[in-house]
Length: 139
Image (cartoon, rainbow, N blue to C red; front, side, top):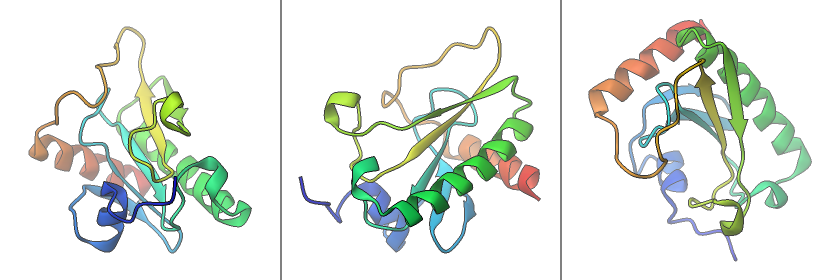
């Protein structure tokens, strides 16, 4: 499959779609998942046009994982999480639905179950508030 510039993450990177951004640098952008599995569910994507883990240059991947680690610290702090789950799905058989490489950051607390992903969008005001909490935790 060739990289599709019409995917939603490519649109976000171009400014053609909106997102609740919590962090960005020259190599990556992090924003709230609009269909979160838990409160604070955040995505980190490379600015590079990469379909999955196997379609990115190692140097770009190194920048992306550094950004993921940095944002994960902020998410953990912002949501007072006991732990953090980092997920990356490569290929449709693995469950990838947006074919632009991305890492999921999911804050985890004992006794809080996941909601099903990609079922219903969260309220935009709630996502904006969550993004503000993460941004504050990153400073």
